Image (cartoon, rainbow, N blue to C red; front, side, top):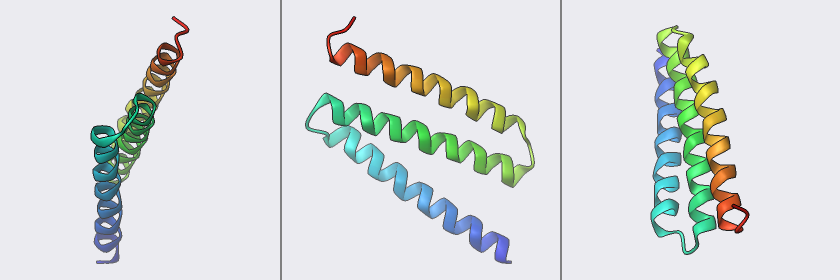
Length: 87
């Protein structure tokens, strides 16, 4: 009973985070705001994968989330460097 309540609360927080991140990604006045929103969304997706690993007791999701986080970090660094004119 209490576990499902906690899971619902966590899903609600994740949903609000996704909505705010997508809003900032679409509405962001500058490209830097969009990059930060994209980085936030990759962090939220990583949290979702960790949550799925907990719920389904499938720890392969943890490995996938780590790979996704590293690729997201490299992607954000690449876009940030491009925006500064470093490529």
